[in-house]
Image 1 (cartoon, rainbow, N blue to C red):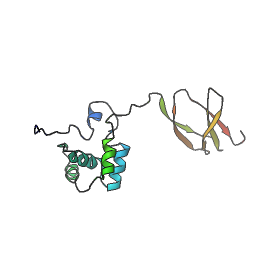
Image 2: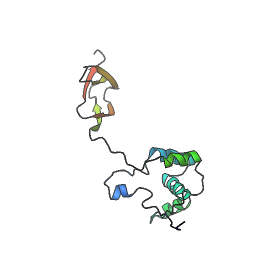
Image 3: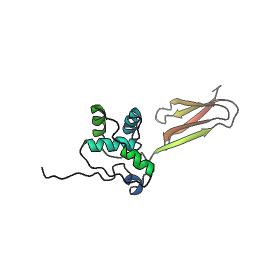
Image 4: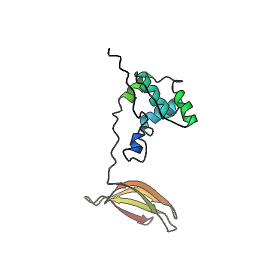
Length: 156
């Protein structure tokens, strides 16, 4: 009606890296977008460009890399299904806030025999089996600050 053309700003999410202090790009690493890209054998940037232009939004992806420019140009060699468009439309544009109490743990067994690893529920005292460590092996997992673990050999 007013002949106003919408133009996307930072369509590929680089503002999250450059201006908001994130370590990974929440657009390019979004599981929904990655799944859709994989199904078309394209990259996430191509999916985002394709999706935005199908909504009538002008997209001007900035890149000085010739390969990236060519890939962006080829963002129209596949068709997103109506279901894929709906899935992308449903994304809320908010970056998940990481839980500050979540930690990554790696336990190392310096013994020769296998150990069983248990998380100890402080409320009930229950020991929940969470994994095994082979002799000389490691066990990596996510957990939370304050969680306690117990290790037992095969004999308990």
